[in-house]
Image (cartoon, rainbow, N blue to C red):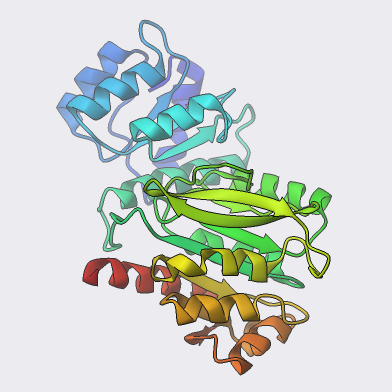
Length: 326
């Protein structure tokens, strides 16, 4: 649904050109949208935030109460981590995507991928849906980690457990990495900030400042905490510190140690495994540098080794199994 005739035509041609999608109708207002939804029973709705008569957020609120369905929110001014996006996700939007001003192939592909992902979250494929809200996924990486994470993160369920990453990299590079991930993924990607309450689908990157990122489980949710870097801390962010902080709730955690020099993360992963976490390490053949996974393996901190192409899917499967048997 979009009030711009040009944008509706553009979105329509985009959907029609994608073999995964079929356009069943377009609407310029809330009234038209209600009629088309009733007549066509669509699998997914794209919804603009700026609309006449009733704005998209208000329409989404009514829709989720009366006829829940997957919705991809669009807006030229929508930031995935902004207040409008947070409100839309709280109301049940499957994804929030900034509406591009220029119809580039990359922009088209991103929108189509978001629509397909939204349909899958509604159960229209064979992927299991997430119901447990107590899980969290942790990643630790160093050299080669950016490439590994860009392979793994798209494998994770859009509305799956929140993800927290400790990647050895200067803060300026992390900032650009986050911007790229936030453009490429339907999930919300940002720095892990103190006192953040993590929601399903959130992806948070530990900042490389003089504060270590930790996690705490309380009041039915995971919360980000931070404290000053210790004199003995070789790395900041430290994988050991992040992993170790979640160890008291190990049965709720899935963790993977990725490519990198040294042994950061091995001790923290051992603490997690001893407390019931599911722990994976990237295989030697798929690592740029096998140091960190090898160190964890030598300490018997690793449940399984996986090629980088399988880590996200395998970790999700293990946590789903745990949720079903809990």
